[in-house]
Each structure stands twice: as C-alpha cells, then as structure tokens.
Amino acid sequence: MIQDLELHLGQDFKNRQWAEGNIMSKPILVVGGGPSGLAAAQALLAVGQKVILVEKENQLGGAPILSGYAKLVPTGEWAKDAIGGMVSRVEASENVEIRTGLSVAAFDGQPGHFTAKLSNEDTVEAAAAILCTGFTHFDSVNKPEWGFGTFQDVVTTTQVEQMMSSGQGVRCPSDGRKPRRVAILLCVGSRDRQIGREWCSKICCTVSSNMAMEIREELPDCHVYIYYMDIRTFGLYEDLYYWRSQEEFKVKYIKARIAEVTSDGERLIVKGEDTLVKRPITIPFDLVVHAIGMDPNVENVMIASTFGVQLQKHGHIHCQNTYEGVARTSREGVFVAGAATGPETIDDSIAQAQGAALAALSIVEGLPEAAE
Ligand SMILES: Cc1cc2nc3c(=O)[nH]c(=O)nc-3n(C[C@H](O)[C@H](O)[C@H](O)COP(=O)(O)OP(=O)(O)OC[C@H]3O[C@@H](n4cnc5c(N)ncnc54)[C@H](O)[C@@H]3O)c2cc1C
Ligand code: SF4
Image 1: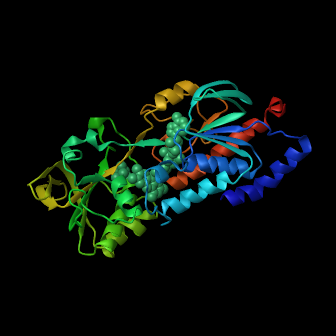
Image 2: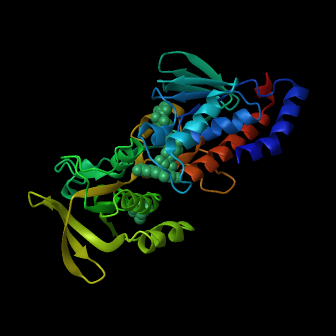
Image 3: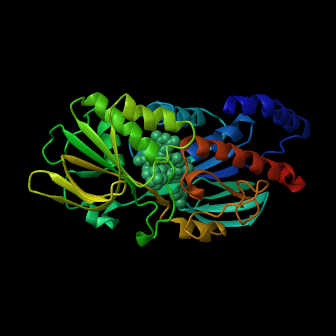
C-alpha cells in the first residue's frame, strides 16, 4: 500500500517540490512510534516530506513490539518481523528525525507554523502534527472477581503472546507445567458497563480464536474453551478463525455469563451461567486467560491539553465523524490515527495513518506561507 502511494503520488509531489523549491521544507510532527505512527511517517517519507517522529519509550514499534506480541492476525507474520520491518524502513530514511524517550510538553502556533517543545526542552518546528499515541492495555486487576492478581495461573492474552514469542511455549506460571485445560474469557475490560468500558475492542475475538488454535497446535492434548457473550470475528475472519478453530482444531465455545474464577486448591474453577441452556456451569481449568481490551491511552487528558484537541466521551482522541473529516481532530492542522481514536486493528491503524498523512500533506500544500 505504501509502495502504491509512492507510485501514484510520490513523483507528483517530488516534481512539485523540485519545481517550486522546497514547499515541504518544514517537517510534519508524528507523535507515537507504533504501527500507525510508523505508517504515517513512512507515507510522508515516501513522498519526500520531512518527518519528526517523537516516541515516549526508548524503542519504536508500539504495542506489538513493546508488549512482545507473537504471530499477528490476520497475516500470520511474527510481530517482530512485520512491525520490526516497518521500524527499519522508517529508520533507513534520511528525511526522518527520530526522537525516542521523549514526549511533547507544549505545542503552539497555526497550521503551517507550529512549534513543539519536547520534554527535554528542545524546540522543533512543524507544519502539522499527527497524533498516533495509541492505547493502554486494560489492567485485569480492575476485574478482581475473575481471579487475576489472586491466582498465578490466571493470565492475560498479552502474557500468552509473550510466552509464545519468547519460544518458551504456553505454560502455567505457578509451576511451569503444560496446561491440559485452558479457558479463554472474552470481553475482559470491554463491553462492560459496570466498570465503565462500553466499547468492543474489535480484535480480541479474532486474536483469541487464533490463540486457541495455536495452543492446540503446540499442545494437542490440551482442551481449549472460549467463554463468550457474542463472537465478533468480523468480516472474513468468521470463516478463517471462528469456524476453523472449531472444525479443524476442536476448540469449544461456551456462550456464558461468568460469575467468578476461584480455586479448589489444585485447579482454577470458572463458575457462571451457560446462557444458551440457562444453567449454572462450573468447570475446572489449569490456565485461565483474560482476553483484555484496549483502554484509551492513560495519558490522553494530558495529550489533549498539550495539543489543544478534544477527547470523545470515553476518553479517546476525538476524530471528526464525517467522511470528509477523516483523521481530523478538533484543531486545524492536528490529525489523529490508529488506536488513539478508539480500539483499532493494525491494518485499520495503518490505513488511517496513511489517510492522516495525506490529509496533513493537503493542509501543508494549501498554505502558501508553509513554503517560507
Ligand atoms: C493482546 C492484543 C493482541 C493484539 N493482536 C493484534 C493482532 O494480532 N492483529 C491486529 O491487527 N491487532 C492486534 N491488536 C491491536 C493492536 O495492538 C493495535 O491495532 C495497534 O497496536 C495500534 O497501533 P497504534 O500505533 O495506533 O498504537 P500503539 O501500538 O499503542 O502505539 C502507540 C505508540 O505511541 C507511544 N506513545 C503513547 N503516548 C505517547 C506520548 N504522549 N508521546 C509520545 N509517544 C507516545 C506509545 O509508546 C506507542 O509506542 C492486539 C491488541 C491486543 C490488546
Ligand atoms: S472483539 Fe470480541 S472479545 Fe473483544 S470486546 Fe468485542 S466481542 Fe468482546
């Protein structure tokens, strides 16, 4: 997609740059170096636009790299290869200035003429900004009745991703044994009004179905159950993940309301109600996995105040809700993409970031002063 963008637009932009002399001399500021920030930077760099990429952590790559995800859905690529490749392509450009371990402390000015003060007090000029500041993983301690923080063998999907990506394989943290029975609980920290998380996190059904198949592949004797309210393996994922996991990998799905996760001293016990037959169910497991959702970035209030942009009601960065306003925040010249706007998949984050890059370029291009 990036290559297509370069083919269709790159030469045009480059010609204009050469003809008019440096119209894109001021960089565009990209904040956040996850999949969306990397995609925005890459799209801008592909058309000869200078970029300043500010990332608060000391490493680029966002959640898939920083949280050690394993194989991604739907491509099946390892996160370290797919997102690591995006990092390498951005790092290879001469037109990017990468500032890791920093955030933006102040942001003033007008479209075409912004000034950003970084947290180390350096000041940079930018024509526009794209916020790609992503999300925060739901912290399962906020759902204490489901056992996380009480029982060592209640873990999150990120922990299982890390077990897989490190090569150790799926094990019970309490004693390192291979689990014979695994329960994956969906919608932990999503679609839960009682704890103020009303949104669906979009990707966790698909990630969980895929994870269940990977566990069955690694441990063929292990029984894997998925507890769900609804299954949202949206679009083509229904066939690839939901049906395939049942038909080829014998993963069992239980439509249930979970009451609590306890222990009988030897095994974890998941108690709830089977909502199809309307009966209580109590099933023992070795390992219980919380399919955690995507919270708004915990820093969003500060980010919104620094950049002078609005948040939407759940605390995500507000993005204009019209087709024309895609990627635009409430402040002209400041754009947003990816999980900063709400729960997003990687491919949608990348597509949004490319759209935000084009929108930022069109603003820069429309400002005669920006050439000065
Ligand atoms: C368990 C789990 C598994 C998943 N697996 C998949 C999958 O297989 N396939 C898929 O499509 N999606 C998956 N997702 C979703 C995926 O993580 C997101 O789509 C993706 O990370 C969004 O990218 P992003 O760049 O918008 O945000 P992020 O990945 O969150 O990146 C944001 C970046 O911004 C930085 N940042 C934050 N605040 C600031 C600040 N103030 N200043 C500077 N930098 C800042 C962060 O450090 C981070 O590097 C999964 C999600 C979860 C929870
Ligand atoms: S994608 Fe599935 S698990 Fe995730 S919040 Fe939506 S319904 Fe729940």
